[in-house]
Image 1 (tube, rainbow, N blue to C red):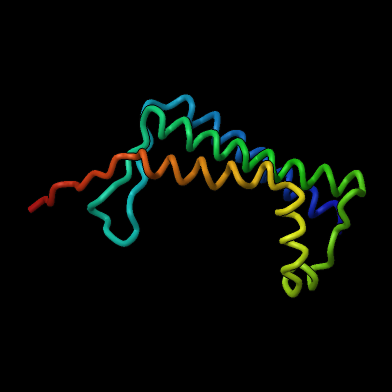
Image 2 (cartoon, one colour):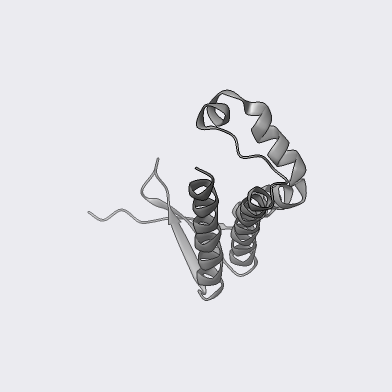
Length: 123
């Protein structure tokens, strides 16, 4: 069971690092709206860099948890404990606050600086 948790966090970390590198290689990135398909959010310049940095911190957070599980400094809970005990999730967030806080700050700043574009209707 330990190997599955560690492997899943390592995969999340690798995909986050890859996504961050992909965003840094692009000039713009567009995100289509779900509620209104005619509007898009366009990340470019600083907003794109902030979005990439937030993905990088997410990968670092996943990697730090996997490393703590491997070292034994953080116990691996059972599947029941993860669902029923939010105190464990809070303990993880408090322990790695220096990785969690930048994720939210960078993500909020990226969306605040992103451009909102309304696409013209095709008749």
